[in-house]
Length: 231
Image (cartoon, rainbow, N blue to C red; front, side):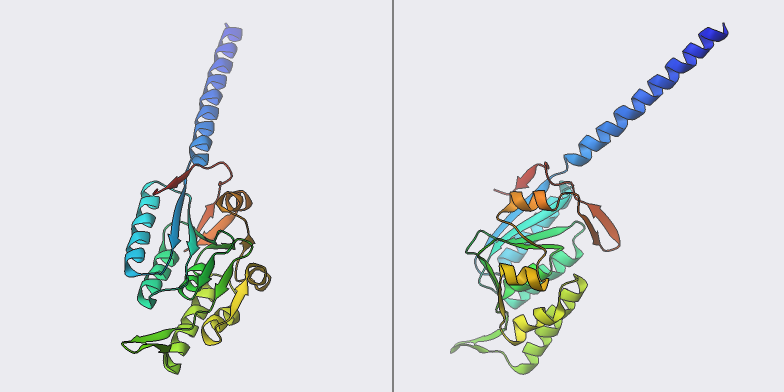
């Protein structure tokens, strides 16, 4: 009888262990299947594009995405819309990656603000970022903004760069000196984190990365994650 009880206990333990292992494996699969949400933004930054990005972030959060990736190619745009995008990215409840792509793309003016506000910043080879000095628009055309305006936006971009661990002096020169950088120069100065050819290479590169944001730690499992897009 004692032997039978021993065997019964052993079987019970094995069954419990198997159930626990099954639950753990199931949880691991579910974590690995959390998607990456892909968004593309091309052309001038406008209020409409800001609204579009707001909706995409909401969809990414609703889909329990582990990362939102924005692919940009922009010569710049409206200051108000750009600042709204900055606030959106800085406060989004998930990591945001921005990649300037494909080769030949630019992140000019407003695009530099958006790239610097990302949790992960990347550029494809042959891309450019910078030239973010604000201009004033009037019926007569455009002209350089006054010194007060330039100083304000230079300090604002500097503040964003400091928040994201990017070199504030370089960020400031995008505004005060219309500085432009190639992908290689941006990487060397620390403005961006990676040079990658496309989104797929970015997802492989950042796999396993821990992103710290708003006192939360996000472990990226992106190598084999499904990619959702609004297309």
